[in-house]
Length: 196
Image (cartoon, rainbow, N blue to C red):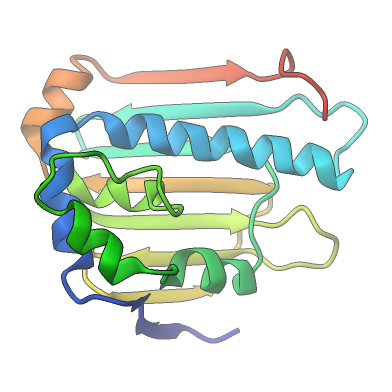
């Protein structure tokens, strides 16, 4: 796979600016959304049956204050290049324009609706990178990157571990210092979750 460059498929050119503006009233929501995505990926991997016998699902959050990087890693289902195109590149959902128009001045929370949670990362990040490898046999790892505009790049990567890492290159120092006063690494064992 060569480097793929393109534009996110969205129904309104104001989409990401609206998301960014909306989220500033509840700036920590991106953490909840990205951790939730990690947990969903673990649940989906269990459903596929593509798990090693000693599978011990984990979600890890790392904060690197020196380099202003925040990452969320899971060993869940991962994504294929085609799935990245479908679930990340196509920010296009039924009635998007009507939905955004209806709620843009209401102060109501839209993150969590229509799978928009991932995009909450752009409220604090100048750049977001996804590194992912699907658990399905024979799939190749891919890296996706965007600076919060409608432009993105995607290419094959050398990742060898099944799962996904979402890396945020942070732009909002106040948010980082308030939410994470020290460099941290949090890793949660998810073996206690109910089996599907």
